[in-house]
Amino acid sequence: MEVNDHTSPTHLKKSTKVEVSILEADIFKRAYFSATIIDTPPWPTRNRHSNEYLVQYDNLLSTDGAKYLTKFVDFSLIRPLPPSRAYNPSEFNDVVDVYHLHGWRFCVVDKVMRKEEGV
Image 1 (cartoon, rainbow, N blue to C red):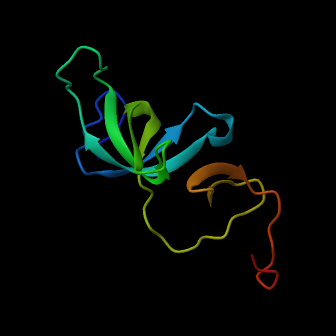
Image 2: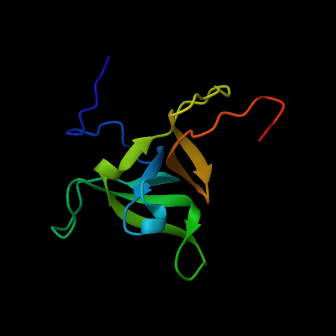
């Protein structure tokens, strides 16, 4: 089994669907947004860092709203898509990812509802 220690991100290739964390704004703190890798290092100029990847977000628009946001991000902010699986009930104090406002956010379960209460 291959272990990813974040020193050699060989799993990050062009056209790979990933999730990217945005750390610049407080509202997005620890949130992940789905994106596609558009291009990978090495870059032809010395202005780009060798650990940056060009991604295009699936749900975030550019400031003019005309197209999907495309930007360079450090590979440490990129993670693979989670595996698809059936709903798994959580327990009190579990740390979970919750999809909210077009991205995944870390949350802690503070109440477990009975099935008849629904969500």
